[in-house]
Length: 262
Image: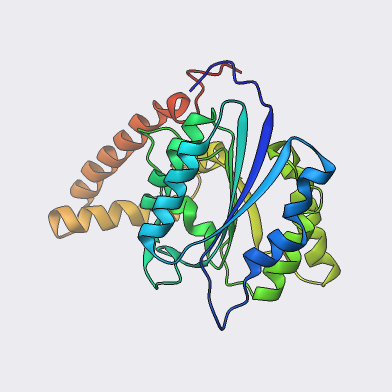
């Protein structure tokens, strides 16, 4: 990880794990749009890989890590199935969100927190349910949906997204293009873009959702003491707040701010 990272090349990498009867939407995206990126800009390149099993999936990400050269940015685009617990592969195996983060984090570290992750799948937004504040963030930002999505809308919405996407600097206008697709279809976009900073701050904000925080206290109190007496609730509340405060102390490290000063 370098403090002075000079960008020279942008890689958009599609990893697909789909089979019949499902359309190969990842391959279609690569074939129709992405493979031509280098014709428009000589610093932008696209790659496509199809994997089947959990082992294939993790091995391919590791191969990408080993292939990263100095001065590159990476956009990882995943075309798979998804659920609340993680990425669902063609083999029916699940890669948990924790394992997913642990797999892509080394890439983000190697390219100085410039990794964009695109989850073109159902429930890909659930990726934000896992966070480890004691380690570096696994990506700069990710795109995902909290709902189920149809094949056709995945294909059409990400065709719009990538129409003018060449590097992480284009993420804002590409999200506008994606949302415009849904607006034209008189639908509300299920996809959002979430930065690691946003996820960290919302996760450890005890004032964000008082009902959720109180339910978290009650759950932990019940597990620890077998009851939710006022005395025990206060003890657990202090313990949980202490954990949140400890996590907040790791914010700069998590977001690479100890390396890259704003």
